Length: 178
Image (cartoon, rainbow, N blue to C red; front, side, top):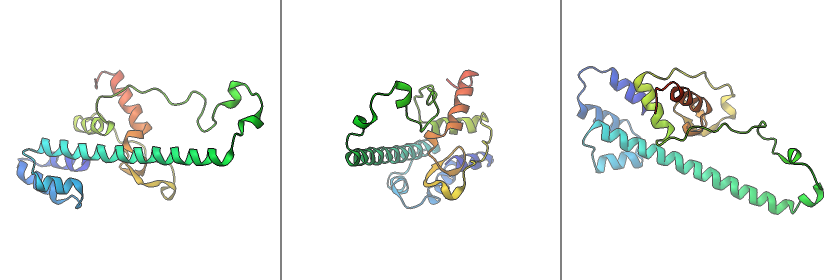
C-alpha cells in the first residue's frame, strides 16, 4: 500500500476513479479485494483507510496467533519439565533473570493512538522518513510469513520493527509527530 501510495502521488492530474480501479485490480483475491468489489469506496482516502484497517487487523491476528503458540509451547515445556525450581535451590534475583535479552530489557516506547504502519505511511507521505539500513540477518533464516513495510522486507512485523520505533521516537522528540 505504501508503494502504491508513493507511486500514485507521482502521477500528475490523477483521476480518483482510475486510482481506485488500479488499486483494486492490483489486489489478490482475498478479503480486502472482495470487500472493495462488493462495497466500492467513495474516495481514495476511504479506500486506503479500509485497506489500512484490513492490514492492521491481519497483523494483529498474526501477532495473536504467535502469542497463543508461544503460550501453548510454554505450557507444554512446563508440563514436561515438572517443577525444576525445587532443584535450583535458592538463588539471588540477578541469577534468575532471563538471559534471552540484555539486562535492561526493551525500551519503553511512546504509546501511539494509531498503528505504526499508519505512522509510517504519514512519515513517507510527509518526507519525514529516510530509507532504513537493510536487514543484516540472512534471508533464508528469516520468518517469511512476516513483512515489515518499513524495511520492505520479510522477517518481522511492521509493528515490531525496532528501527521504525526508534525513528518514530526521534520524530516525536523533534516535534514532527504528536
